[in-house]
Length: 351
Ligand SMILES: [Zn+2]
Ligand SMILES: [Zn+2]
Image (cartoon, helix red, strand yellow):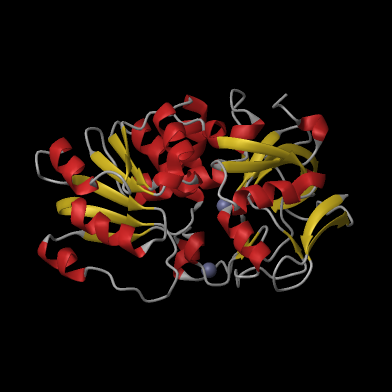
């Protein structure tokens, strides 16, 4: 089969080539891939700046497809099922995080597309526990983005507890920020998205998908706007989805007393100057949100089925597997929101 392989550590070192098809042994489900999203971590892997990537490995961890074979231990799936899958391939199974199914926090976790061959290929295998059947009304294109949606659910619901009537502010309008915005709208919140002048197209997509206000911080004063919208109180919850330190500090500034700031973006350095004084004096709950876990996937599938969240609306580019490089380059240039690879043309739904 054809696959996009990161062959060695370092910049680029990626080739499109033939490799053997994976086999559905044991509890593995073999999936013919329809779509595979290009994620920020794939771009880091391309640049050689993502330490978790262990070459040689096929990249890609956001995908949808059709089951073409199942291992002898598989009971819940059969050939022909439309599915997506969590990225967890292996965990230690015995640490406190595994016992509570917080697989995102297991230090021995192995993930599809980082340590295990991923979805930028014609086929992938995933363990039965990680695979999810798709409701009939969910497109394969939307389903391919269940992973970033689950990250948004983990942050928005499991960490942020966004509730009806809340006013939230989201810093960063990339794929993750857009997913948090859609999840927050689904929960009945008023949503403000904040970014910079380069985010115009991303603002438009957020507004088209229900965001109430987009603030270009290079032209407008976010604190003033939030002051007006909240009677000087501040937002209930802020999400930092950009990884920019000034955005994290702005989030602490514009959140209300006893409010909540959820940190999703990865900062450039391990230690950064964060305005801790505000955390103390405003009694802010400043909480991290890392990746996603099984409970986030279950909620994501429910949101997809209810069509209160439609991830395909953030897809701005689709390329064929052979043209994977075009998708990566557009993403690196910061074009649009989400580029997706179509891995098997016969499963394409977009034309
Ligand atoms: Zn991702
Ligand atoms: Zn573990």
